[in-house]
Image (cartoon, rainbow, N blue to C red; front, side, top):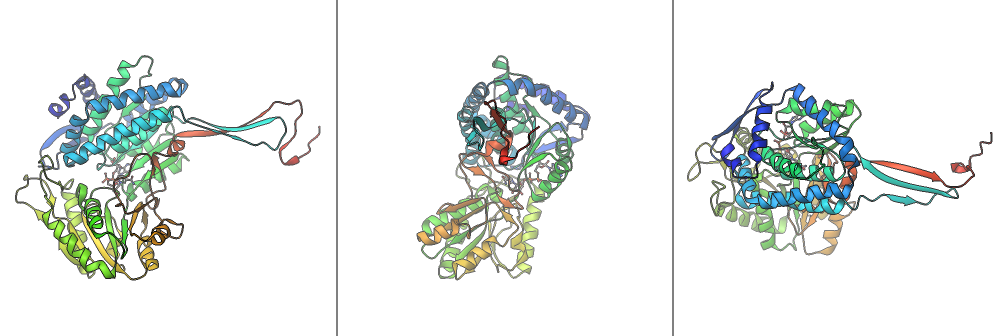
Length: 507
Ligand code: NAD
C-alpha cells in the first residue's frame, strides 16, 4: 500500500502514516483488495464512533476561521490544491487503477476532473453572487447573500473514488465549509492519497486553519455517524438508492440537509435518422466503458424498429473486438468488475433477463489472458421487452438492454418508465425529435443529451438526477448554492417605518 503512495513524494507519507496511526483506533478491520487480481493492498482499522465525533468536532472548530477567511483566499488554497493534483496526476491515476480497476485513460480522466473542478472553484471564489431585489418600500434595500454553511459530510461511492469527493470538497472549501469525507470502504487508498495531497498544500499555506479537510474511513456505520451528527448541516451522499434512503432518513430525522446523487438506469433513444457510426461508438463507450460501473452507464437502449437489427448486429460485432483485461495493459478498454459480489449481481440479472424472455448475447466471466483473482466479464447485450421487470433495476455491471419502438412518444414513455432519472440521450438528426426529447414533455432525467452518450459529463454543468436518483446537483453551474446558506436582508435607510403589504400598525 505504502509503496504506491510513497511515489506521490511530497511528504505525504508522513501524513499517510499519521492517518494510518490515527486509524488504528477502535473501529472494525477493513481489508482492501485490488480488483485487478484480488491482491491485498492494505488493512485498515475503520474509524470508531468516537473518532468520527472527534473529527467532526475538529471541523466544527475550524469553521469560524475558515468562514471568516475571504473567499478569494479560500480560492487560492484550492488553486494550489489543483496544482498539486496536476503535478501528481499520473501517480494518483495509478492508485485509481490499482484500487478500483479503471483503465489508465479513464483513471487519468478522473484525476483531470479533480483538476478541472479546482479551476472552476477558484473562479467561483470571486463569484459567490447574491441578488439585489426591488423593494416595495421606499428607501429600503432588499438583497440576498450567501454565507458558509458549516462542516459538510461527504460520502462517496467506489466507482469515482477521487472526482466526486473533489466536486463536493473543492466547491465546499471555496464556500467556506470544512469537509469531512467518508470514502467508499473499497477505495480508502485513493482517499488517503487525496487527503495527503490536500494536507501538504494546507501545511504550506500560512494561516489556513487545521481541520478544514478531514477523512474518516469505514463502512456504512461510519457514514451513519456522519449523517447523524447535528454539527454537520449538509450531508452530500453519492451511492446506491438504498444508501441514499438510509442517509436521508437519518439526516431528515434531525432536519438537516442532504444532497443525494444516487443510482442511475440510463436510457438512450436511437431514432431512424441517427448516424449509426456515431451511435455505435457512443453506445459502446457508455455501456461497456468502466466495465459498466458508472452511475451514468448506458443500461437501456430504445431503438426504432427500422434500424434495430442493424444496430444490434453492429454492437455485437464491436463487443466481440473489445479488449478485456488488466487495466494497466496498453490497449485494454474494459477492466474488471470491482469484486465477486458485482459479478454475482451481473450473473443473477442475466438469469432473470433470460427468465423474462430476454435474448442474451455476451456476458459471462473471462478467464483467459486476464489476471487471476479478478472478475473480468464480457459485456452483455440483451434484447428484451420493455415490460420485463429486470429493466427497472440498476445492475452495476456492463449489461445493455435493447428494446424496440415505433413512435417517439412510445420511446419517451419507455424511457421515463423507470424509477431512476439520472442521464439520458437521443441520437437523431431530426431537430424536432431532439427538441422534443429535451423539452418538459421529453426525458425526465437531470441530464439530457443529443448525439452524445449518457456518460462522460463535463464539470461545468450541474450534475445529478431526478426521482430515485435523489434530486441533488453537484459540480458546476450554480450547484455551489447547496453548500451555503442564503440570507435575505432588508435595510431601511429612511426615518419612516413603512410595513410590507401596506399594513398599518400605528402605535
Ligand atoms: P454504495 O451505496 O454501496 O456505497 C456508497 C457509499 O455509501 C460508501 O461510502 C458506503 O460505505 C456508504 N454507505 C452505504 N450504506 C450506507 C448507509 N446505510 N449509511 C451511510 N453510508 C452508507 O454504492 P457503491 O457500490 O459504492 O457505488 C455504486 C452506486 O453508486 C451505484 O448505484 C451508482 O449509480 C451510484 N453512484 C451515483 C453517482 C451519482 O452521481 N448519481 C455517482 C457515482 C455512483
